[in-house]
Image (spheres, helix red, strand yellow):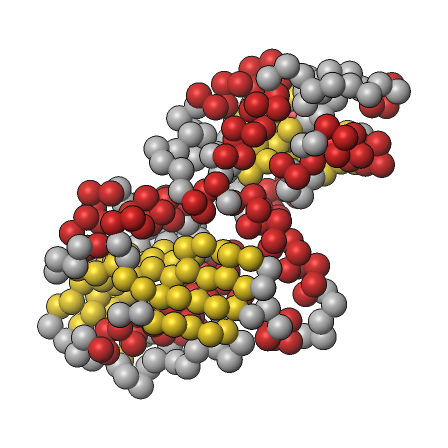
Amino acid sequence: MIKCVVWDLDDTVWRGRLLDGDWPAPRAGVREVLVGLDRLGVLQSIASTNEHSLAWPHLVRLGIDELFVYPQINLGSKSDSVRRIADRLMCRADQMAFVDDDPVELAAVGHSHPGVLLVRADECASLLRSDDVTPATVTHEGRSRRRMLQAQMGRDEDMKRHGTFEEFLEQCGIAVVVRAGSESDTDRICELSRRTNRMNASGLSLGPDDLEAAVLGKEKWVLVAEASDRYGAYGMVAATLLLRQGDTMSAEALWMSCRVAKRGIPGAFLTSIGQFALSMGCRRLLVHYKPTGLNRLAALQLGNYGFVPDPIPSGQGIRYTLALPHGIKEYPRWMRVDLLQ
């Protein structure tokens, strides 16, 4: 899926060139595309060769400035701007699209970032019809994705003003609720399984039918975590699919958003899973890990928490095991966690 669309400005978002002294109006249909992508939960940014002091005030005048995150408006290379955006938003090239009126610029970005979807400015409306852009369902988290990221950037700015990272976390007022998943959560859980790459322990991407029995409590369970702080809501940031086998609670799938990794929320979620397993009379918590080439961060999280790895003889992955109850860690002191059972 395309997670981010990067726009040129001159003769793309608007007709005309600011550096030529124009005050151009938006290209016909562009505003509708910008708003439509935002409602679908697709992030949008800018890679424009322009003077920031001219371009940004003009975006404000047009009333579309808030639709863009981490805009790169400078006199440098657009390919370099796209790279900075990808790094900041943690997107792979094949999760991005680039829109420009100039075929040379399109080719240059495509050469530097193989896999980026290249879109001519006069064909930008096609993005709203693309299966790579339009999800089957749009969740609340999807509709709020841009605002959540903008809140995150506010956190990042405030963090710079604190002596240590933990001091910053202590003033954030992080609150986490871990609860059983319900039928109304299915779309978001499926979305999380598709969008989470770096902390998808099993590599699984599920559909609604795969979760139906689990959310109804038939032999399997789903636990989800929702988080918020004084800057706003993160939404659902983690989920797991659990199966009890004797005295072992087995996490067949575990998805955790990497955007909350540094706040201690993944570790808190693992503690909650351990507490839930213990309440069910289990003595071990097992997480199935299957390397995908992208999810090394999930293995690091499990190892740092205290899970013991045991390679599966068939070469199909690793079992990470935690003994209960002594392997369960305390919740981080800078957050409040409610485990609802």
